[in-house]
Image 1: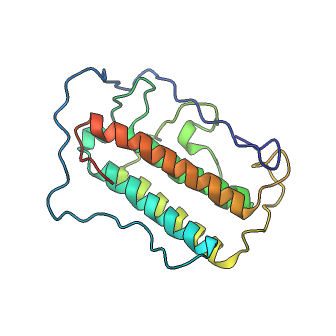
Image 2: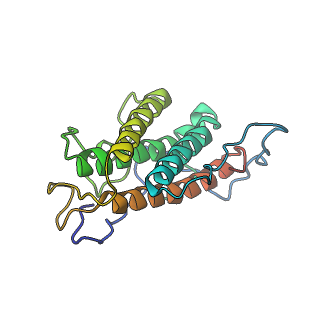
Length: 209
């Protein structure tokens, strides 16, 4: 998903159905999705007390990380690894993809650090379907998401949004600015959080933010 110009968005990784993934027919009857219990805690939207874009980026990325993790944790263990969609991805694969995606953009792309395989969420191939490495647990993915989030927060606290990433394998054209990367990563989180809403509802999980 390398950039071919300073503002060209990367292509979306295809998510074709694959052998070995249990895909449930979306027409199958599912239990009614429960509403959150009365008084259950909800994640508050980030505070609106600042106009500092770096602070807002950091807060909203924290918000979306916590949101997608909470949604996956709300599912029974077997539903986290099963797909109810024709494309075949599972909620745990989506969560792992988001952690790897954020690391690709901020650590590998912006900092230019060696992260080993930058595409562990798709078997080393950016055009392959998502695949969770064997033996990976929800706690493993949550820990990765937390570590990546800490790196991102430090970058945003210490670096100008106008700074460009160094030339490297993440970019095939002019490297993006930190501000562009933030917008791109934030829209990926928002888009995939919506995808996860659908998967959770089909699995009979709780509705709402």
